[in-house]
Picture: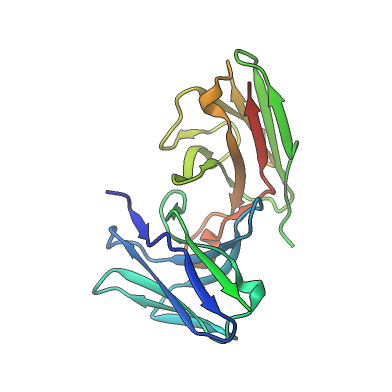
Length: 107
Length: 115
């Protein structure tokens, strides 16, 4: 079983919608979690990090649920430019990445 | 700003050739990583290094080797390239520590095609 699992999507949402992704992890000892954004044919770039219960940055909110071993990413007021693949990761000797969730925001 | 650079954005090689992929970071990070990324398989760790001349196997080291002679530089070597090594190769680096120090910064990637 892969250590970090995500629904691959795609999630197709209209502009202005709110969308949420979940990511489950198997290592209960993980302390740090990350959401990366990856545009087509580009490298992953850090979007948010989560060390306690959650983190918020503008339209983006990440939440950590240790009891159920998942992290979520909420995007409010979706923009066309939010279209990308979102990767979650947890800490280890290297970050363990999920396969990513694809988001397409449509006009 | 952390900067991680990779020697080539695109590379075309023939089966059996020896291939060198270079990665350089300018933030004095102790830890460096090589991943490959394939559709449907996500990012898979090939090798990592936590110090000069130190290396550790990741999840898929077969067919690859690495070299870290200087702190800022981490090279991935395909001793004899095969078509199943056609992929996007991503280098990353990070500091040593927990929490925020575990953030990994990626290079722009090298798209390798082995014919």
